[in-house]
Amino acid sequence: MTYSTQPTASHFINGAYVEDTSGTPIDVIYPATGDKIATVHAATPAIIEQAIESARAAQAEWAALTGTERGRILRRAADMMRARNHDLSVLETFDTGKPYSETSVADATSGADALEYYGGMAATLTGEHIQLGEDWVYTRREPLGVCVGIGAWNYPTQIACWKGAPALACGNTMIFKPSESTPLCALKVAEILHEAGLPAGVYNVVQGLGEVGSSLVTDARVDKVSLTGSVPTGRKVYAAAAAGMKHVTMELGGKSPLIVFEDADIENAVSGAILGNFYSSGQVCSNGTRVFVHASIKEAFLDRLSTRLRAAVIGDPMEPETSFGPMVSERQMQIVLDYIAKGQAEGARLVTGGARLDRPGFFVSPTVFADVTDDMVIAREEIFGPVMAVLDFETEADVMARANATEFGLAAGVFTRDLARAHRVAAGFEAGTCFINSYNDAPVEAPFGGVKASGVGRENARAAIEHYSQLKSVYVRMGDLEAPF
Image 1 (spheres, rainbow, N blue to C red):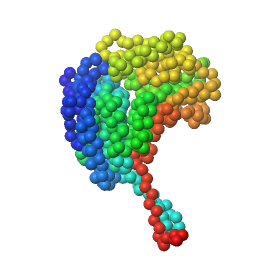
Image 2: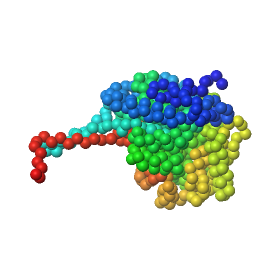
Image 3: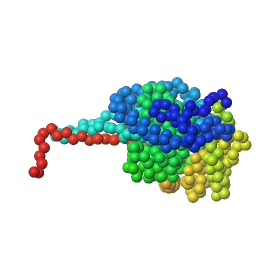
Image 4: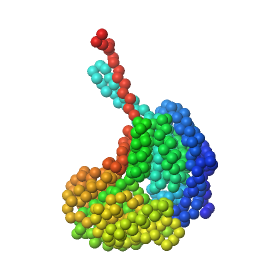
């Protein structure tokens, strides 16, 4: 392997790489081969203290800059990320196993989009003037302070920027803890931000497992916690943050419905189902893994889907033509294989796939189950792998009730040529992020997040500014003040 994947050090704190080898070693495994490609060390209490104090010390000075000055640094970092897209994409592929054909267009590029978007927005973060007769009130939009970001392993570069960019634009400082499965990419984000002119201590990265995250979340000096992760993890982190009355954003999992009506363009609907189930080998929180297909077109849909899946190029993620890669880890692969076994045991019809591939690495073939019923485990629980459940339906009222009969509410999609029905269904979905004749688009300009158990708060768009800042109201009396005595 000619590309060096061992980072300079495990952590990036106060503008520099920092190492403490007394922390628990964390091996970084390349999912396509199972080989160890790097080792980092979990943050010790001393490292965590260093990160928190650095973030605290840097925050006031960073917030005192004008929004224009802060934005200029973010935009410069965005340009640098785009210029280095190839190297960042290669590292993302080593970190996650996702094909280079995907990482080169969807990961560092998305991170750069976020830095550019919030860099441009930073100067516009103003308050308002409220006239009350001759008196008046003005509001100030102020940063929260020190923010902690806890990342997931499926989009390490993107998530580091999705959380960092709005936080920094508002004048906060950040400590970001990547997933222990994918610790490499966030270090490069921190390095680029610092090289772009970010003052030391404003964006820090520390490695570790759950106990490191817990130490950060429960520290009284931390003002905000933003997590991307599973619902069980979200419940624990949300509760811990609430105990300290901290601001939170929870971007959690889902079991999202994708409805294909009888008048849908079959080719587009199949494309949507592929993007909503097999992109990133199915490891996307918003995936539409419950595909409700009208009974009259179900077999035509399955036939076309099976044909399209045979065109998937499964192989070395570094090869440009590869379009489907491995699971992120052996553990995640085993979770997915267990769900496939449950689907077969419960009587779902296996249309295609359903097995681990006979090759090195953690590959599971794209899997489609048909004749799935709502009570099956594969239709109720988030699998986070390349497993699609196809369910039949007859009427709009029936499918809407079934689509919403879940604790989750992250995303939902509908394919139909009937414009009125499309908007009616989108309005009826109990989900925070919906799609009409498309699936899994995530532009930084649009809010992203869920309802019900899928989370609180929103990432991206101007909505994220509300979650990384707070309003102060100032009442100004222009005349004399009366009092009862």
